[in-house]
Image (cartoon, rainbow, N blue to C red; front, side, top):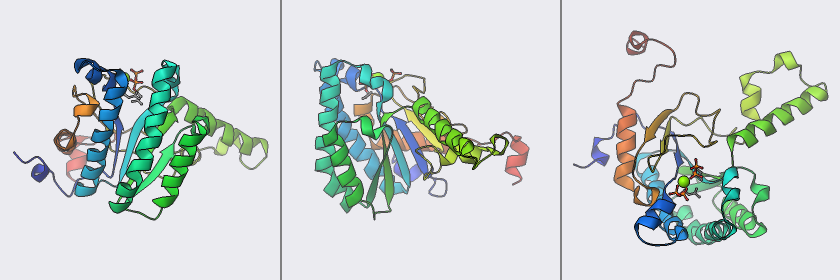
Length: 248
Ligand code: IPE
Ligand code: IPE
Ligand code: MG
């Protein structure tokens, strides 16, 4: 069956967020070091970005490195940072050709200088593109992001520009690193783990979740299309009743 043909073109999520998990286990299954799995995971990233362009997903957020991932062995962290630099440098022409605009969320200043430079360069080069916005979550965690937002808002209150009683959800959203992007309609996590791991806690408030046992390096276009088809079979009620939704 051609999965891509089964997708309803009128109900494509405009923003999909993915927790790309399982690289280490994939490498182990293949008798290799963990970093081998991360390298293979890049091929999945390339395919999924391309798939977004093909079916019209406008925003793709990929959880590439969490705040907690700094606690991994130094060797693995160093290799991941090197992989990030080499991948961005190698893939930028391809991203540009496909009309992909690169963005990043997270504590970017905590990344090694070389990563920050490469990332900024690619963000600048691709800034005029508008087919797909690829948002890399790097040194990202939701609790870090929300804490920052609270600090920013508290400063406004301290300065007398805002009253505590006037704070709304809008103020919080405007101070998150995702303020320029719509909330994801679909969140995918690979590798059989059923948790959020500090990812987009605020933004996923009404997102549909899709979990698969497939490990990230094996998650390619057809697996992605399956997730979208699953999304399209769901009724999003936002607190209302099913009857209210169907008469709308
Ligand atoms: C996801 O794969 C990639 C990162 C977190 C950077 P893992 O490295 O977490 O793979 P597993 O979970 O150990 O299999
Ligand atoms: C989540 O994966 C972070 C990324 C995919 C970058 P982890 O593999 O680090 O998550 P936990 O720690 O097992 O929940
Ligand atoms: Mg993992």
